[in-house]
Image (cartoon, rainbow, N blue to C red):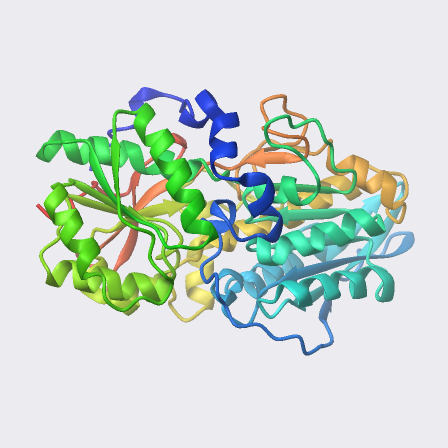
Length: 474
């Protein structure tokens, strides 16, 4: 195995060259507020996911005190999709919650000002519903009197909770939501990021990282097999597709690539023959898209059957989790995408010292052999909360705790270094955790039908390469 990207050192995001033009082209100010645009594509696996508005009581779990002077209880509420179309994002969450409750300060209690506070975690299932997520936030704040909230997994979950947290004055830590979507939803302008949200912070990547993760892989396969710098792109006629069709060409052009863009298609299309014929005629060496997962299955099957076999396929919004890849079997072998967390990252739990690999192994053991899920990175929600609570005088003073969130610095956390004071952040309250390029490959000796192999670390040189980047087709 060879690391063909780490030698270049730290990445230089191409989006910086024209962020203002990029965001304007994508219509970011209008599209992002609803959470259905390029900005949520990398994290939203099912844009048309089914939802439910039926209410349910939160399941709760507590932590025991160490027995020193009691300061009472701190209550944290976690709103996340455990059922419904986005449940794949919440798949590891109950395990993560169990991990933090079994070791470290969430077990022994938070020591603040000479007192020890027990910690109660309430888990709220958003049921993959935007409306229900917002309703749960109100319930948690006004009915359950939480001291802090977490919200994770897609703008469909996070943005509604963030709006309520800001309006009702409750500290909130968010994850797995592209920063631009989160920021615009709160009234910020990514072109002039001067707004500092008072109560909420977040960590994840940005929309621009999608194409920036793909370009180095096109370069490398092109160097091996020849590169005409043409990329076939199939984008649907929805808000995601419109944004991608505006943004991808801008960034790709800056790196010498032209996008062969098909006519926008309707979600749910069953016949892609015209599009496939166009791509074959173009002779494009590469392919990219941002489809609904069911559409990708149909499109990709027809592409292979009709002889469109690009040197490398790089897809967004689909194939984020093992079950998605398994469902397509051999059809997705050597198809690439991006990953915001991987067992090969060199980070550790600030509670236990466990490495990413050790946590991934523990998850596999506890889940009956399942492959690790990228959202094990939600562990860092708890790391940030602990750091903020233990730096204040009164953990029930929501303004004081919220201010502390913006001063959290954790050099080594499960999701990566957290520094909310950094001047390098794209906006106040944001920490970027850059992705790696992964490829679904058959790995000799593996017990899984396909493995998510880290094949490119251009945007995150700290990640260990675990396999060679292979052409999708030669």
